[in-house]
Amino acid sequence: MRKKRAAALVLAAMMVLSGGCGKKKESATDAQTEAITEAVTEAATDTAEDTEAVTEAATEATTEAAKDDGEYHLVWADEFDGDKLNPDDWNYETHEAGWVNHELQEYVASEDYAYVKDGELVIQPVKEVADDGTVKYYSGRVNTQNKHDYKYGKFEARIKVPEGKGFLPAFWMMPQDENYYGQWPKCGEIDIMEVLGNSTNMQYGTLHFGEPHTQRQGTYNLKDGDFSKEYHVFAVEWEPGEIRWYVDGEQFYQTSDWFTALSGAEKPYPAPFNQPFHVILNVAVGGDWPGDPDDSTIFDERAAMYVDYVRIYQKDSYDENVTKPEKVFNDREPDETGNYVNNSDFSEAEDLDDEKDWNFLLFNDGKGSAEIKDKSIVITSTNEGTEEYSVQLVQRDMPLHQGETYKLSFDAKADEARTMITAVTAPEVDWIRYFPDTKLDLTTDWQSYSYTFEMKEKDDDKGRVEFNMGKQGSTATIYITNVRLEKVSE
Image (cartoon, rainbow, N blue to C red; front, side, top):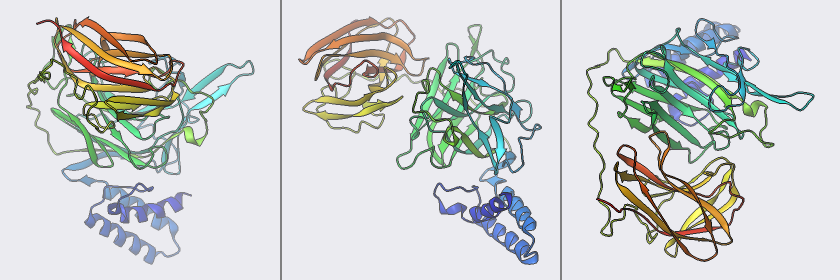
């Protein structure tokens, strides 16, 4: 199997510029591809019967192809071509179930749950049921702390994620010294890749930091494909004052906006992202975000995360003399009636999958569709999902000022009596509620709903109006129109 894989790597390296998501090593240039071909051909010609020579040539050629990527040069990589994880490179982490986020798995330092096979790192969650019916979950979590820690660079991995409700695979980074700026989130966290096991066409890239906890997040929707069916390359480019996220070389998010504070005093920018970080790979089971596994979750090879390689590049030098970008508050004007909600009466058709104006979202087994029709939006659910936000309609970028009073109002009905939840939230400030989650009763007749709230938190131009229609005992179709968010005091 090892020899077959080496031969495949030669072919993959030669095909690296052809695109696609097949099983291959990446990052070769035209010149490097030609060098690979010549090296392997020579090895095969000189030692036609010597498969080991071909294997060695393939490995060396592929590693050489990975050394340079534009301005970057390779500083460390693991192609997982050995028989086990190298203890000089990786640490096994151990944590009890429930350690964070109410996750169900226990992380165990064992090759049963994190191991090398056929040139890949495999992280395999396991479910065990005792004779008395007690269920326990085990998984693997490995990191490079104090072995490979780097400040700035390009961090990438080629990964196929698990499929199934309750799985949360992650490729992410934490500081070498988590106490340097204080415990999480003050220390900072860079999430390169997270994919929910029951929504395997959506990738999340997130930055956590601050006091209070603040985050910046971008998403990448894989229009054609499935992160659990094919391998994809996930990466960040981290420089002083800017971090960029990529999937298969396509940038989908960047931010320069972060901070941290200690004892109430903000530290100089670009803290906390100006210290060495290490890489972490793990698969969580259950917890606050993915929800818990159910009868549909299968713990076989489909539950595993497969990591083809991890590569870290750096530039020759970095200019750390950067200043924090000036925060420009998007204090956009409301319309002529004082309403901050765009397309409030749904008189215009729009793309509900983008992040402009209205956005229809499905999570955690929520299934359904939304359509703008007859000056209302019609939300049809076929599965209510496992969370209240499993079926969700939102509009972002609401400018809210501390001390002001606002009114949220709308008209709504349903095909049969049911409930719906509305709120005004802070996606980038720990998901706090400026207007709390409020459950309301819908009937088959149009009704008007109106709520007033005081904005007590700091100014935020990223407030979000939400309508949540999941996990409420009904999939009855909902109709909404005339949504307004307006200031009622000066």
